[in-house]
Image 1 (cartoon, rainbow, N blue to C red):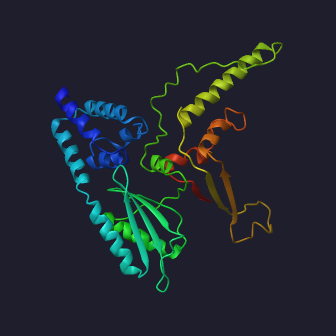
Image 2: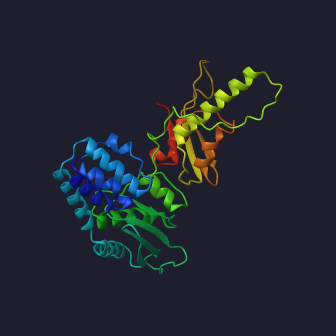
Image 3: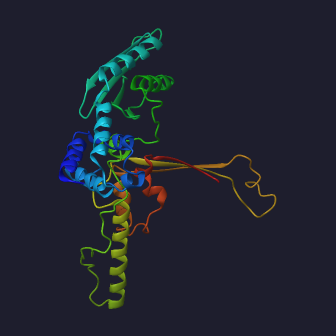
Length: 319
């Protein structure tokens, strides 16, 4: 790939908003799913563009491929935000007599929506509105809690029709921090850290052990500490995690016993258990468990898969 084509790719990718980068690259369908998974979408845009141009160069991309990417970008630019607002508002007002909808344009092709719900006989309640953030040309919307749960299907329908998508994705993911939700949903956070070199020696720190302790014990402690640090870095990376406050696990299982006539074994209904981990910064707290000696490394995949799966609500059932 010559310099002219590389520059064309660079300029085309630079004009893509970060929140729509993954969507556009998938629509372009030139780079494979595996290649995109190995790209760190959390890094600075200039570095991301360089990585993507190198990938295109490895696949021997032509000027024709760059032109196709430019066409996909133009299709994204053709999205009419004003039409979206008008359609969204009409759908809600046709279904409900008393509803107030307000819009505010935000950065990166996003729009904030404020909805004050009313009923057939009551005016909109301005003190309990629902806030929605929608990013154009994506099947994702971020919403605050809805006081009237019966209106949630209507809200989803309005978003689906107005955005011209087949469906709006529902994810079991909650947080008070919009930037963290965006990082997880739009894959700007990546758990595949290919840039980490496991052969690079970790920075040694003083173990502050008793000078009279057996040297073999000191050596074993240092090796284990380095292993824990390496595994933790391979799992979480060396940068800050998206901010989530909790993860919830619902367990349903049948009691199993080798003894006949066991009361629990004869129970038809499964045993149900709910486990909830909470912290002001849950993922950072999980990241610190093994280095602090509180848990073994690596941690359970049920804890480390949260950003990758894009969920912090889990249901675990017997196979």
